[in-house]
Image (cartoon, rainbow, N blue to C red):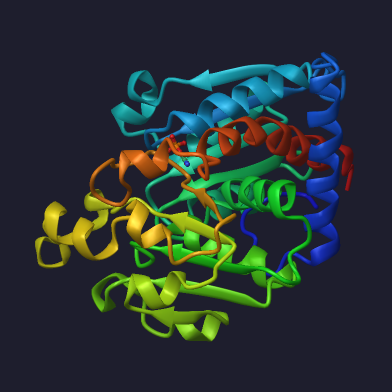
Length: 306
Ligand code: CP
C-alpha cells in the first residue's frame, strides 16, 4: 500500500492488517507505551483545506506518537490565498523534505491528484475529499464495530441520514461489505440518497422503524447543509421527527445495539442528546480509536518502501 485514498477496492486482508496493527497500538497505549519510533526522521504534512476537529487532531497525535516531525500547515495563512496552485504547494513542500501528506479537501479527487504527482517515496492519505471518500474514518468505524461486536459476518448495520453528501457513508459501505457484513442498510429520505445506491450492495429503507428493526449497529450521519442547495434542505424539526435518533426509535434496534456518529453532531437534528450521551453511545470511543487507526495507517504506508 503506497497511498490510502479510498476503501473502495481495498482487499479484506489489508483492511484487517490495519485493524490488527491499530489494536496493537491501542493495547500498547493502555500499558502506557504510547511512543514508537516508526516514523522517526520522517516529516508528515497535515494539509486541511476544509475544517476539521477530530481528523486533523488525531492525525497529529498519531504522527507524533510515531515520532514523526509534524507540520500542520495553516492553509488560510499560506500562499494558496495568493493563488498558488495545489500542485505547486505540494512540490514546494516536497522540496522541504515531506515524506507524507495527510490531505482534506472540499473537491472530490484532490488527494488522488496529489498522489499522481508526488515523488515515488512520498505517501498520501485522504483525510476526506468532497462527498467522495473518508477512508480513515471508515477504518476507525470498523475498528469500533469489531471492538464492541466482534466479527462482521453476523451483523446488521444501519447507516442513517444524509447518505447523498456523505463521504463517510460511501467509505463505510465499501469497508463493511468487503469485511463480510451480510446486511448493510441505509435509511434516508429519497432526496438524501444517491441514485443507484442499491448497486453498492445495501438495503434501502425510508422509514426508521422498519430500517432499525433488529440492527446491531446504528451509524448516524450529519445533515451536510454546506453541500446542499436550498431545495434539498429539510427543516430541522421536520427532519428530527422522521429521521432523528430518539430513544423511542432506537428501541427498534437490538437492545445491545451500539450507536455511532463520525462527528460533528447536530444535536436535536439527527440525534437526540439522550441517545448521544446514553449508555449505547460509543461516539467518544470512536474518536479515541481514531488515534491508533491513524497510527496504523501511517506506519503501514511508511513501511512500504516501494
Ligand atoms: N469525523 C470527522 O471527519 O470529523 P472532523 O470533520 O472534525 O475531522
